[in-house]
Length: 110
Length: 116
View (cartoon, rainbow over the protein chains, first blue to last red):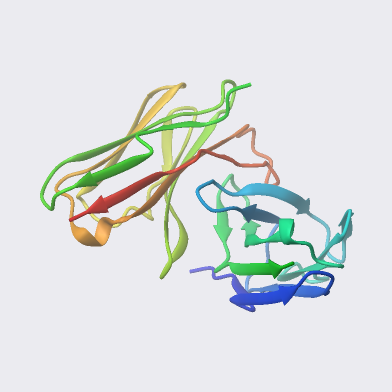
């Protein structure tokens, strides 16, 4: 069974701090997606990376796919309260199926 | 444009009762997914369909769970009989489903199920 472990599980920080969330697996994925979920809502896609070593930036968020396509990281610069939510990585296989990570719950205090 | 629509948003039922969750995917999407989310187990894929055909149901917990997709615009997830351990938020998601491994999945707002 493929498993995507995220760390840390919980993260509470002050506004303005930087943070990194990690997503690790022993399996190789064809693609890696990051979603953010807010309370009472479904996850919403932030980014998709498909090439080993690929780096994508979305404003203050930087996403990286590991060279071996087994891991990924999400770095947030100068976190804001609006970044609060549950961050989920999801590995794509050869079909439509996604394997979701265990999740990182981020709380940013003003 | 309407996103994925799920109903009901909340369901409270007693153990042993039948529960039916409904989902309308985004028009034009060919793949539909049912997920269950709990604090303990995170977001788990239960089953997914492509062009109305079940492709992978390996995540369905047991025979009490069944899912159907009679047409491209409607799917149901049924639990019969329900048990307290089925309490969770159930999400439906859809994607273009054209074989790309990087397709975005669009999630509905979820159904919060409580089985007493």
